[in-house]
Image 1 (cartoon, rainbow, N blue to C red):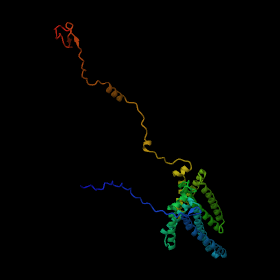
Image 2 (image 1 turned 180 degrees about the vertical axis):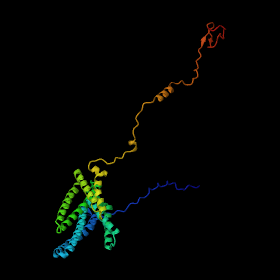
Image 3 (image 1 turned 90 degrees about the vertical axis):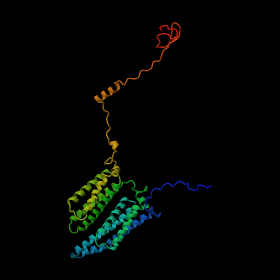
Length: 354
């Protein structure tokens, strides 16, 4: 006798398709409440900033000595002074970005993206890039990747304990664009103060730009709260800047400044999250087709419809077959026999059926 040894195990259910998950890495090391990954990024920004800042400060005495030595070296010394000021401003900006990153400031994170993106564009599209610049570009891109994708770093800026977790992304973008404008105004004011030795009007220009930068700094902080007045003032300032850009010289950098200026009012007024931040509804409300379709009103029946319905209900139908009538029985009066309905005479005695 043979037995069936076939496998009766039910087939395994089909496995769902595997999705590609990017590997993430955590050091699980915190220093002063901040992950080690963030401190590494802060160091990558602060170290070159400190180097540039101290180099410019060390070169300032020589620039001032050449500036006052003789009139023949005056122009050359002034150009050197301008370069030193620009290098020092760049170093101070990198140190400020590192400080903002350490505080978990989302604007500092955005400025880091802008700084690395600008430097990368200069290296890629520029000419005669050195090996040092390429290495610096790669290091900057690595720092940006950590800021964007490292889980421990992302939680610092957008996690439940982030200091600016309730700030909409569009407001952050507007503040980043405003901060870049303020940095440019501050540098321009410093350069105007340096030019005051040539003509006194440059001192007035420097004071004017410094006052605008201070006012913009105040509005920059007011944008962290739903202050409608600060929103209007920043928008008005952006409109004035746009007007000056359109009427002025369209030199190198015009497209960048124009884009930064347009970004500010758009991010403050158009996105849904920004409008909700200021207590306003969305600019465009999307409704479903069923909700948007008009509801049909009940209409009175027409005269033709009424006549047709009346004729359908009152028209006689086909004649029906007559119902059978049950036969009734009677008795003969003479003999008492039973008589049927059709009998004319009694079937028993022959008497007439009465």
